[in-house]
Image (cartoon, rainbow, N blue to C red; front, side):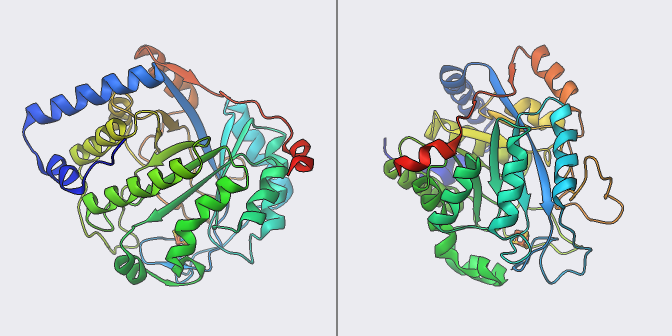
Length: 346
Ligand code: SF4
């Protein structure tokens, strides 16, 4: 399938006629139903650490910000995980800031091994790694990664990322290939909408995904489209992405990639998320905390969230709403075999 040309993406995003939006939405809805039925997967994030050795101008966890830093100990991870598992969540996203020293491979291994006791699927949103490191975590029980390029424009990227390992644009872009090579089952890519021209970033994201699909056709891919929020009063927006534009991006993506998952986090409102699942979104986070220790340890008083939550509904409320809208909430579609048993085959 040929890639959607940049000019066509731009035309679609700029088209303000209601009939165009209606037609786009209708096509996206049909494509979603054909490929996913009416199923929505649910997951939750657990923030393990807010230590970060990089500086991204748009992020509150940047090493330049004087915030309280904390990383969960192993017993604390366990308490957080227990609290999330009790809500019925089976797909977990483990997050850290990007510090190769505060949260090294051994720390991530402990987190993954602990999570394996509670969850059927474990995705990591942590610093990018080499293939051997991803493979190690895969054997410990991780089965997916999430890694956003933030913006694909090299110049803008260099302007926004001025300290730490995250400055290495090319390593970050290559890392999902290393993860796939290492055996990871799911890979999620994305851009932070608003950092650069939206049409160009979307086009480059699609190119990246298509390269990955060609190289590793067996991997399950998904895309995310978080919108930039101001940090500490500063705004780094190069483009404003309103609700209609976000909806168009979801529709376009669904039509361009009929079988690729689309995630939408709780940084978006309940109203928008309820609407977006009709048009292409297939995966929602639920009852999230973006604070380190935010579920069981109640550290919200002394550690800041990475971003503010808009959809504050509980897992139960989201499930009820999905059922009212004739969707099937999916808590797990995956049961792992012990990845350790594959080690002898490699
Ligand atoms: S976006 Fe990630 S790497 Fe950048 S400052 Fe925030 S936590 Fe660190």
